[in-house]
Image: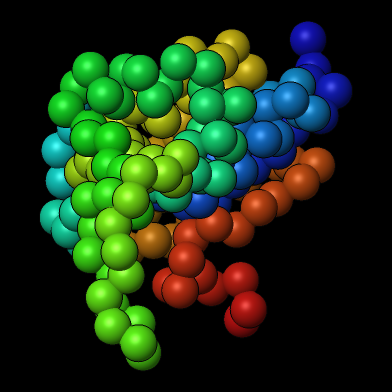
Length: 164
C-alpha cells in the first residue's frame, strides 16, 4: 500500500519535533530525519549543547504543547519540572526600580531541556503515522539515500545546507 501523502522533517530538535507533530494531523506519514542518536532517557545529546542550561516554558508554549500532547504538563511536573509564578517568584528591575511582587496567573514551567525533549519525542513516537529515521544520515551529514516526500520542512537550524 502506497502512502497518500508524506512529509519529511529534517532536524529532530524541538522545532523539528513540533513541526512533525503539526504535520501528523495532515499527512499519512511523517518522517523525522535526525543525525544524532536519541538517548533512551532524559539525557544530553551531542546536537543540543544548550540542553545543559535551565529552560522555561512561557504560558503560550505550555498551551501549544498541551494541545499537541494532552497531559504533558502533568507528566513533566511529576518528573521534576517546577511551576513558577513569574510575578511572585522572580524579581524584575525596570527603569523606575524593582517591580512589586504579587501573585499572578503567569505560571512558567521550568525543567531541563533534556526532560522536555525526551517527553515530546516519546509522545511523538506513539503516533502511528510518525517515524524517526537515522538511516539516511551519514556521520559527516551527507545523505546516503533518497527519500521522497510531498512536503519537506528544514528544521536543522543554522547548520542547514538548504540555502546552498
